[in-house]
Length: 320
Image (cartoon, rainbow, N blue to C red; front, side, top):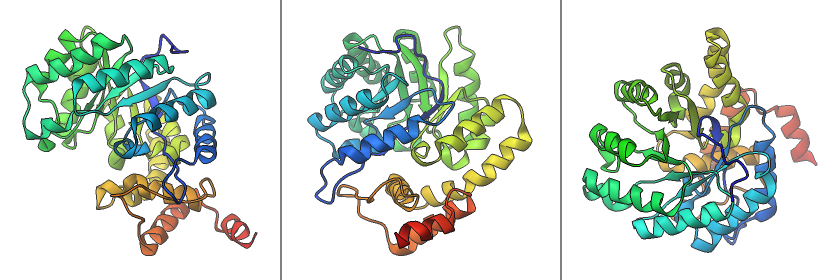
């Protein structure tokens, strides 16, 4: 059961990475070290697992359960854990939700079912979320995809979800249009029962946070959680000068991580942690493949520009 029963999804929430051995099995020691490293950052609200950043689409049911077990052992007493619910069917989503709650999760991040890319109705979305909410009383976070994908929920559907599923407490907003993003922030956080908007627009995080998001949930927090936490505090304090200074450091990493093809973002973050000496290797599971040496060099340059990588330290580590 959750060790943080009063958790409300808000604030700075990194989505951690999942290291693998060369044979694609989970590298548990490296994962434990990664969890401890991220959780040591001051100012975090929670940690997310079994999501895009942990390559959940390539993980079996047993592996997802093991990821949750390890996370609970390493950081569960320190931080709430948000568990992703990735499933094409609602009954499977409900099973994941029950197991996540039993394993100690404090909230659930609900991904849209893949069939919604072929078309959806409000009734389908409601049926999906009600099936999950009937299986657990944990707070739910709606993962709002871009509408162009077919998996994003139109405004009218979101309103019905919030009205009819009271355990929904936040959305992870991947809305790429600034006007729509701002409209959702204004509308949702002013509801009688507020719905927190957690930005996942890490490629333009400062702009997103300035619009008034009550938090952020991002895979790049696996690398730059400290910068994200400091940026969030600066924005909340209306310290624009500090926020812009921090954003100048974040910008090179965002440019490197979120380049095309977008799907390689977490692949690049793994390479960044290797360059920083925090992971032994940057193995990803197929269909993802290792990025080129030229791109790794660009990531190294971005880390130097962001003042995260000291070339003298790197040279000493390589010499050792």
